[in-house]
Image (tube, rainbow, N blue to C red; front, side, top):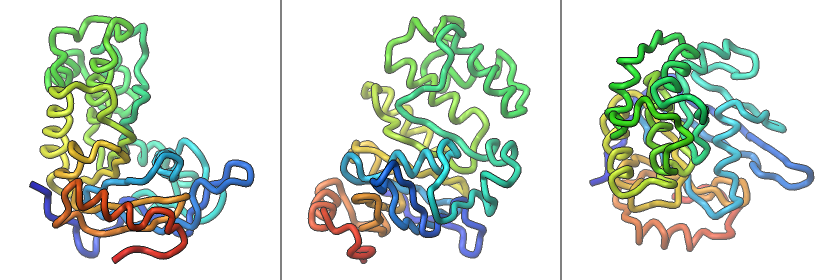
Length: 253
């Protein structure tokens, strides 16, 4: 079942991009992207390899500066506003775990909890790890984990501070079927209200039932932006195929 859109009318967007551009040399990775992400939206960010999905997420996360245009998070410029306050409301989950290999899983979460000013205790870290199926490995160094176990620990890290906006870049990467089920369950439970996520993924089967909206990038430009209602994986793939190579043609209805 696909979630219905639950964006809050009139609320300040969690993310606002206007004519956002990012160039690497002469090549545009993002080309005049306009985007508003409201509280309560669950957005899939799709497109072929090289379309600009990861660049958009990394720009939104404050990891790279845009070349032109504007980006606001929670109504503030992340490069000029209170970066600590913004970071506390923002989460990032990708194929890169951002975990410290020499620390145990619990120690990683305690460390990140301190960064967010949460005062996370070892007991709290264990509860978070239990939610992702790692209760029995809480005291083991992350370097001893399989790729899938590392991704589970990264899920616990990304959700630790209950972010208002979660950015996800191929979050199902490395997860087995049980791990994918765990991530889907947590996203359903944690993002059923005013919180929002923006997820880049190729795993439509896992991600589409979670979504309220679909955005497709092609050559750094938005070619499709529509509600997910009425779409299954086959219809969505056909829609993307019809608009392939249509960068610059405008937003699809």
